[in-house]
Length: 81
Length: 199
Image (cartoon, rainbow over all chains, first blue to last red):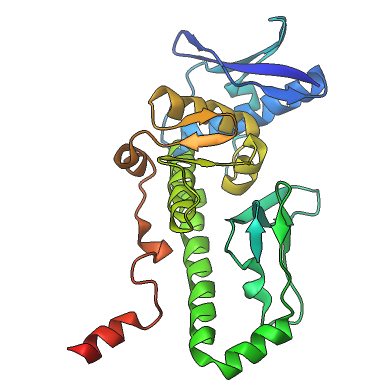
């Protein structure tokens, strides 16, 4: 298991994840990041805020960049009509 | 009955997603929900190494028939379970992730306090970020980010599996928390009536 960190890029700042999450590999980290970005994009809509270029930046415990997941990409907007 | 440890009530979707309906701490008898039902429609599970006592349903039913006031207390207990479900539903449907997590910590803090398991403003909380996510309908990463927001605002301190609440009023406000639904005041069933009689 490796600890992965999910930093949040928002409004021009990188808000560092100081807790991280133990996961089996980088693809598991990628999957968690997509679910996280979906969940957080939903939250933005719930609070009546537009997405403004936020993304999750995933690095491993050595600081190596794994993937960046923009909220916009993960946002599965569902409309009724 | 949970004697030591921590348990949860949950259900699963066909594709394996878990929804946690409630958390249970020492002193709780979570299976009261099925005392008069022949089939259980959900599952109870422990979250960490726990010590539990099993009481046969028929023993509890016989106890309630023999001692109706004990029956009243168990009825009251399941009504409070229902109040907790309603309050969680309100949170999952209508509160922000930030308020949902703050609300859960307020609830757990008061419940641990009620059974004497707090240590000052702190208590042992053996749950993972994934379990908080499954309880509140949030992804694990979202829980992780929100916990850091709560820490950043000094509403919680997480250290070595324990959670400390430095400013109770501030956490209550963040969680839009009103403790009425836990009915911790006036614990004795029918206590209000006794007072009236005394007057």
